[in-house]
Amino acid sequence: MPEEKRFAVLIDAENVSEKYIKFILDEISNDGVATIKRIYGDWTKPALGTWKNILLNNSITPIQQYSYTTGKNSTDSAMIIDAIDILYAGNTEGFCIVSSDSDFTRLASRLRESGMFVVGMGEKKTPTPFIAACDKFKYLEVLAQDALPQAAQSSPGQSNSEIDYTSLDAVKNTILTIVQETSDDDGWASLGDVGNILTKRYPDFDVRNYGFKKLTPFVNSLNIFEIRSVSGRDGHVRLMYVKEKL
Image (cartoon, rainbow, N blue to C red; front, top):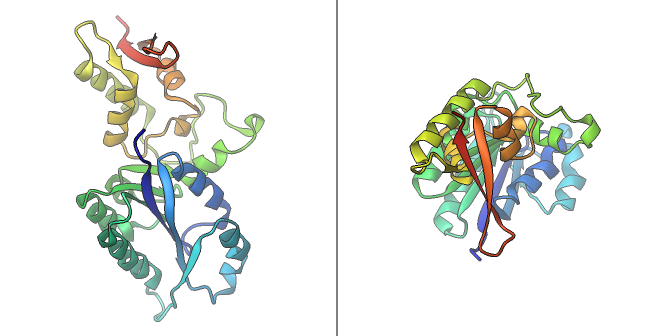
């Protein structure tokens, strides 16, 4: 069994609400283990006073950064310097940058250039350049919605219209192209491979954006594909395949 990726989770406290912390940590656990958890802000500000118990309960280290000059965001600089220090320490394979600020676009690109796997998380206001600079990007509103009781969630196929994510038509056409490019002689392509390639082309792709929990029902809802499952050698693990309907 391959070892889990070690992640450094760096959070911009002045750009993210404390209500999202549990969702952030739960989500990154799907990709690996958060060995470094730091959050940056001017903790002398009364507005950040509500963070205390949340940081203690989730073992997140607060990094104090004073606002030296009005209008200048020194928190961004502190996060960037720390990220580069962590990169050169060589103790992680990935970074999770939590912010809705485009100032971290170059940082995400630099980390990827050094072979790091970069996950971005931010609110719907996050600029496109930062999203594109990450390997994957998750909308915090969608993560929060996904954690609600089933009765309070959107129905399958009902997307969150407030978020400017990749359009359903664009995703649909891209899936069709990927299937055509990766299929065997009979037209079947691995659904897992399709999902991985789709995320590389659209870092913000997440089936939860469109009201689904899993990739298979999402692809099935597009009504232009056939899906089949094949049992693995142990008789339990199912391999999913997708093919364009004729």
